[in-house]
Image (tube, rainbow, N blue to C red; front, side, top):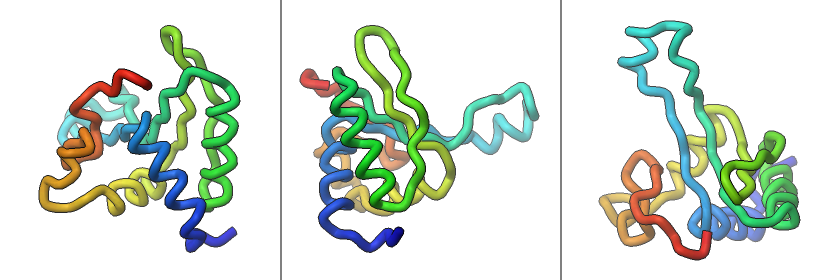
Amino acid sequence: MSRKTPKHEHELLGWFEYCGYVRQVDPKRRAKDGQLYKKGYEVRFVVPTLVQAYAIQRLLRETGFEPGRPYAKHSRLVQPAYGRDVVEWFLERLPADGAGEELGFAENGRRTVRRPSC
């Protein structure tokens, strides 16, 4: 599947803006703690329903990524996508020069403002 499908990319980025964030490896901590440091590269979408998780899964596949299995966290579902390539794909598409802060994202892709609807 091609990663050049603008309609799907646009829709997936809309979901990311609505309820997504990234988790990245801290290279200093990985070097210090070695295998004790378990955090990897991950994009997470936090949604209230399984139907929304399935919609995100479809968009991830159409964009060329393999989604993880959704899991419950508190009263929500988390739809993960694992790997450095998926994290870099989203980070490359965040607005540059601090403009992402208006959308509620830090430069590293972490959400800085909690969305009340997520």
